[in-house]
Length: 227
Image (cartoon, rainbow, N blue to C red):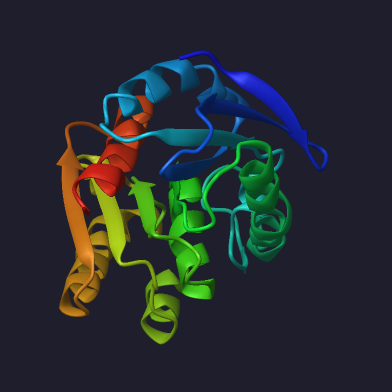
């Protein structure tokens, strides 16, 4: 599937898929992920539905995708808590531009997904708006400080939520990140108890294994299994 690049605001977004699509798939990405994006989208393209996929670049991953400020958990860079600005960019610029340029139906099903902190961002976004039909969160950073308490007070609104985690991720020596397993199990339970269409899939390996295929699987489920 051939990609094209369009400028939205100050960002150059990579676009795959076709106009008049049933699904609009959005993923916040960094430079490393873009290197394997063709492979990810080729896997997503196995679905039966017409889709438009937009890879939206992130310059400062820790700042642009974190919902609130938090100290560093590895290295020296903390989290700036600028996710609200990123959400505003999505809703006010990205989605309207894509709808117009690609003649998407007004009721197009929008799925926001991502890997790691981008997965957490997708989950957080759904606590802020009911705009998104589904959330595709692959190995999301649900270890993020105060996330579980926040989600209980501001429940995720999407009715179709994919969660996954590598089976080695919770065995890290980092005490902050080690809660990721317990937290994702609790989040899955909370969502299913509320009646959401939700799945939690476990992948073999740690956090950095097959990230493109894990993210593709998240988007596949959100389009196929939730029908």
